[in-house]
Length: 501
Ligand code: AMP
Ligand code: ZN
Figure 1 (cartoon, rainbow, N blue to C red):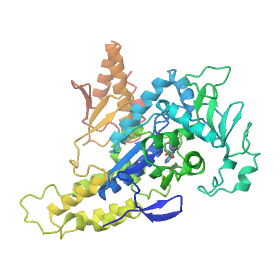
Figure 2: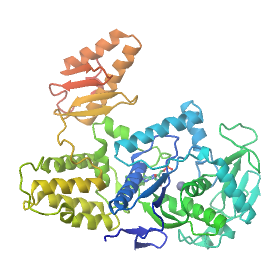
Figure 3: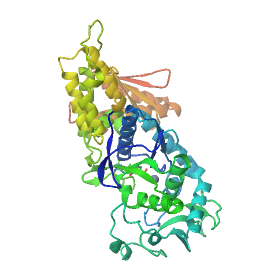
Figure 4: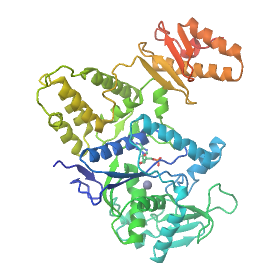
């Protein structure tokens, strides 16, 4: 039987995957729902999806858990700074619960658009507070905690293998100085429970044996993963940024509280980067999937783009790169024979034909190699169309690229910032800046109509007509947009072109 080889961060080696449990227990650190997920986050969820699909293709059942962080993730890893959720709520002028539900909904839309299979459980931190308190009490009983004026902390010096996982140098960590310590005894110590500040009332806070407050971010993952999965968990995943702090702390908590190994295999995805810097919500340099879609890119083009690099290598984002991936996806769909009807068949087994594809997938999820292998199959003139189509169907169970869906869509659907759909006739190739402007204008017209400002709405429709753009309102609320002549020859400034005064 075939086997999956996966790079285990714990051993720094590629290892043959041998599950401890049936179903395989898989935990992935999930979103902090205070803002839109950016496409860097989504790269990590795509890699995790491929891992899960690879396991399923080998015949394993998988219990997949992805947590939702809706409290306790502070803006600084040093246990200082604001709670990202409370900060996000203040930014949006909404309650913390409202923004959690809004951004979680948005996140699920992204997952759906990218053909990422949903986990079996989405545990929310705010629904597991008592379980976290229980784990902190156990750590307290076992002598791993201490109290300061602002919370209950984990004493990392008591957990002797603390530095092993991330290969940290204990000498550097204990020196202090560079990092704000507060009352912490060691730089690496971290908050398990934070007290609510005395002068302000938090929207999210709970009673605990130590005082009113909220849990630390790291305890959320150890408590929620072990609430749903057997220990040791088979596979735990996340982005590479989590190795040094978050996952190191998860291991310390779970292993100190139970005395047992926490996780068997750790798999980490490298970052999506922009101009050599990481793409980060806090950095403000992030691109969302909605922005890609608004510029006319199909969501699956981003999934395809992710397969251009191995998940353990950084991938540099560029609009041109995603555009090229969209083209390559389109080319692949076009070359797949539309049917094998009336063929006698060549007796070849589709699975066998895909041997190089599977070799690449099971060799630590080497997707660039897997795609190259699939291209060879679809180009192989000795294979019948029937076998090719069956091979593509099987490969797509792992790739999730809708390869057998109609190749050249005659239309493209874009969603605007309110979630309203705009259907473009895709036979017209529009520069993305123009398409973006058209989407903005259509939204402006819709808002004018809902505000009963029909004059403004007509001005926009007439302005469109002068440019050769026809818009039609469909009964389901979608706006159909047909561009019958080139709107611009290249240099026109979209701001001027669409002024419509
Ligand atoms: P967050 O919502 O910020 O807690 O992150 C969700 C997931 O995305 C985590 O697994 C992070 O490690 C991962 N992540 C964050 N930034 C990036 C990035 N630029 N590229 C890839 N993964 C990322
Ligand atoms: Zn986590």
